[in-house]
Length: 215
Ligand SMILES: Cc1cc2nc3c(=O)[nH]c(=O)nc-3n(C[C@H](O)[C@H](O)[C@H](O)COP(=O)(O)O)c2cc1C
Image (cartoon, rainbow, N blue to C red; front, side, top):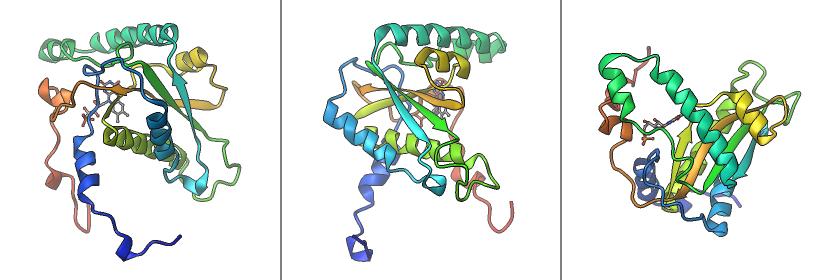
């Protein structure tokens, strides 16, 4: 079915979800995600645009506590490695920041990128190989917004080495884990990002990143 201007939906709800979305680490309740809600959230992710309609993503659903514990141990080691690179006030600030909710949320969704999918002639990717990865990130953002609209929290964890996650989950060679996402019901959602609340970094004013006609 084609849609025209008369079918335009109110934008307010979308903007509200966009601004309500947060990266969540501390507020997971540990309750399960109802199956029908998870299906809608994954369908939203799978509705993302992708270069050449390659749909290069897969979603690995991880509930097993042993697997999540093994990943969490790895994340803690990577956290320590990053912490060791910091000094002074920065090191103190980082020490107070929680960087994952892997154990607190009952479900992790690991999103991967398969560069072979839809190949070898992926329409639109010949000049910019990264467009495949961009597509996966759009699926992740769709998932994140849909989960927010459903009242769930999402936390993106990137303190990991790809070979470790590939081994842990049996991801085939050539397929890259792009995001380890913690997903689940939350007690509440903060209005200010955690990193801002901890004085790590603030959102830049919009006008500093908008350029007109030239950079
Ligand atoms: C690619 C990517 C990787 C991220 N990795 C982590 C992470 O490992 N740990 C963490 O606590 N937050 C992680 N985040 C969340 C960001 O810190 C967060 O998005 C940012 O501080 C803004 O906060 P907000 O998402 O609540 O608006 C990641 C976000 C992105 C987009």
